[in-house]
Amino acid sequence: MEENAIVDYETFYQYLKETSEDYLTRNPHNKDEVEACLKEIKRRFNVAQ
Image (spheres, rainbow, N blue to C red):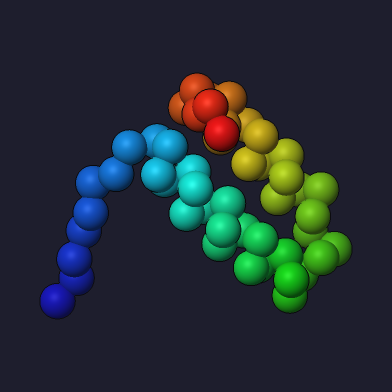
């Protein structure tokens, strides 16, 4: 059974950033692209972190 959770943008971004950092430990060559995407998501959703 699949479960869903509704979270605010701040929480979503926090989990996304943590997951991205984990991903980058295995794929450091993608750092610039991942950081650019995180920056854009942060801007679009007006995340204050």
